Image (cartoon, rainbow, N blue to C red; front, side, top):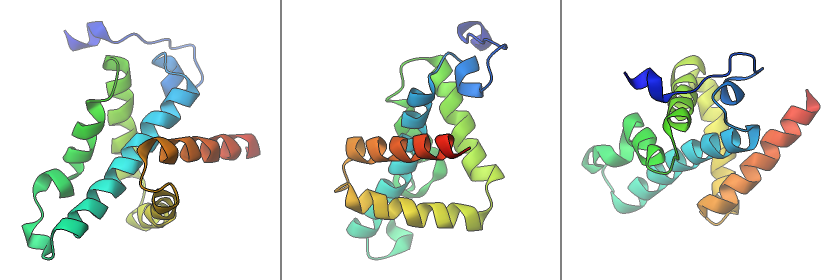
Length: 133
């Protein structure tokens, strides 16, 4: 059974920590999801003039998750990435997603479209936001 490969610590205060994922690694995974979404959209619009010609691997929400899953270390990280992506896609309103994508698109450009730089700056923002709470 798949759940036999997932280790939970139900005494932890957050979902990533319950899955044995540090807050830092959780921010890396979330940053990677958001970078990948922006990068795929940017690349698609750079390569294709007509939106109808954009292949699903550039435009579908499952393609973003699939790309990020390739970079994860274990089942727990895969569960967390799926949770984060679903939360982002389902729970966040379209207006909130659009505002976030706008701000993160600026970060994408400022980081020179470099995934590592983007994630580093994204983690700094997450840390600042956590310190404000």
